[in-house]
Image (cartoon, rainbow, N blue to C red; front, side):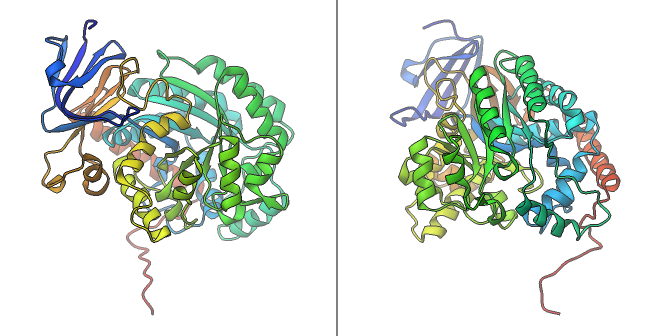
Length: 484
């Protein structure tokens, strides 16, 4: 075996390889960024530059958070509560985005990354929605912030180029609720060529940077807010650079139809759906849509907690699985989930499908763990590099403490992680072969710095909310659903 820079021993290894092997007492050997050995302790190398004894711990591939919006994390805690999707977008997300400084964007990414790492996330697809005149500066800042955290990140620049009549009416209705807030959907009609050129510049600057940990994609934000030229232009640009596109599809009843036909059918008709498309949400879809997604090879990311938070419903994940659609898992915005906790979200993902189908076997714990690891890697086009613990793959992995009383007894590691874990069990995180979090402390943050981060986040949030004219829920505005 090649020289070993990091050796993890005495662990329960959940490989997620093709045979889905679970080694009750095994090792993972890493040299540089690459896994060079996985097997039982009887075959373990004798030495390494660093040895991590993981007795009583499980080692898994790092989680892939396939759909997130890190910047909105500064808006959680009450201001976004109890709003439907487009009320939330028009009266919280977009007006607040105009009030962020570059320092706020860096702060948001670091707060998001701290929570994501502690929840076992090693890779994130982060779709950034920012004022058009600040695109380049913010994208550069976000990439730099992720680089400093050690995470693997796909940064995707969102854009829109139209507001069709059906959406204008919706926006106007929600705008009437909050007349003190200037309304702007963020669309840039007539600027498609310029937008794509600017995104290409971002791809040129950032894609493959920081030893390959950073990827950059074009993201036509919401399908109904993009013309066919925008969708296909983004796809052409992505293919030119060997990347993917991601888009929000059928998230709510409001955006389930385009030009009089179901959105999935419209996207297929214009030739957009394909294996290099990651469709976010896909809640409002039927059997014909699922068949179309399967036939086109389109990947899907489901955000179960966000879909519940916004009242959008339950995506038919188990039906998509049955049809052969690859479905990944995401946490979505920090202010319409309100945590970045993949371990906790696994339970939501499983139970929602059981309840929806009235069938407790329709989505197993093992299948949900696949969604968060190897299926997530497949969905973002990285299954040849991450998503499982196999020789030759990049060492992106997590070490999960299984000692807690709440995790015992258990016979199945998958069952314990999905149904018993609460999301605080991840102790060590390795990305690209480097330990980026040890004993729940990232290498870039000590206790003093964490307290400063929290204080800065609170201060920035309060300033942004005030500047945007938002009306947050507070302890003085108690709202009860009890009859009067």
